[in-house]
Amino acid sequence: MLKRKYLLFLLIFMLAALPACGAQKTGFETAQDAVFLTFTDVLENAVILKERPRKVVSLSGSYAETWLLAGGELAGVTDDVITERKMELPDSVRIVGTIKKPDMEEILALKPDFVLLSPDIEGHVKAAQTLEKAGVTHAFFKVEQFEDYLQMLDICTDITGRKDLYEENGLKVREQIHAVISKADAAKKPSVLFMRAFSGGAKAKADDNMTCRMLEDLGTINIAAKHPSLLEDLSMEKIIEEDPDYIFVVTMGDSEKAIEALRDGIEKNPAWSGLSAVKNGRYIVLPKELFHYKPNARWGESYEYLAGILYPQNFE
Image 1 (tube, rainbow, N blue to C red):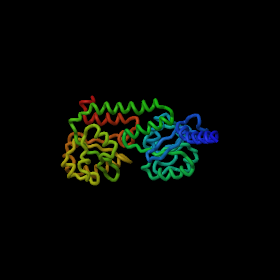
Image 2 (image 1 turned 30 degrees about the horizontal axis):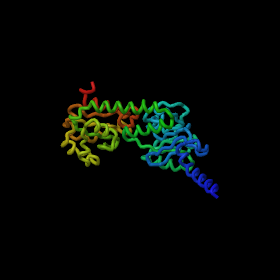
Image 3 (image 1 turned 90 degrees about the vertical axis):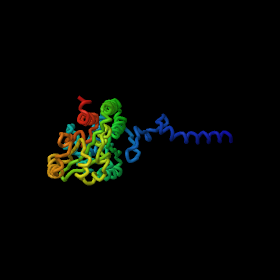
Image 4 (image 1 turned 45 degrees about the vertical axis):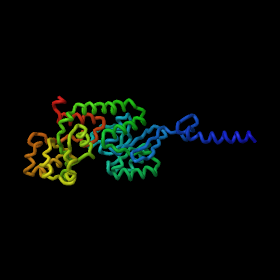
């Protein structure tokens, strides 16, 4: 009787221990339960990779670049990789639609084992539903600031096994950014207006924009943060009242049409030419590759570009 009780107790103990062993990937783990890597994506989904992905598809040019910076290879990408980011890829890489309208038939034809998605794009959310039904592992990433890029790169290099590239393309960039910020003249606190221009007009942006975050880190005061009404309507009255030291613009879409819209719009106001920033040559159109598209491993370069304009005496 005692022997039976002892055996029953031993069996219960071993069964209770099995899940913990699986989580720790010990020798008790069976081949069927083996997991290469698990992580949580930006939507709090548990992503389980049973093995290192060999056929990866990215539905964003920015994420495609991050995957390459992590030492990965790509099977499919959306066309913004070529039209916007001008990336050179092997002929074997297939174009699978646009960033907003990915071609699910093309994607599934590649038989991918991992797909990179953005939660901010409706077409990606719909794509995830199809991928889920097809049993294709996928993950959502959201990159707005440098820290988001660093976190994504950390996960991607965990997957590729190239932590040396996390150091090179992530941690060293962070050091570069910190070095730039430390040289900024924080006491100066120049005022700025930042606008995103497109063919239909322009919008002021505040702290929800990556360039505005960089400007804030460099010690500037964004007049749109002081006057939230500017986010909805570019009021010349408010702009004249604040008379910012610098006006920065980033174009969206067709750059020529965006610049033309500025000329035909806000620049036509007689008061525009009287602004200090305009009179002193501090009305500046920023390069899209550093301030519209996510700069990824060039984030430090973006900080340096702005700091050189704001504090030229410190960045000669």
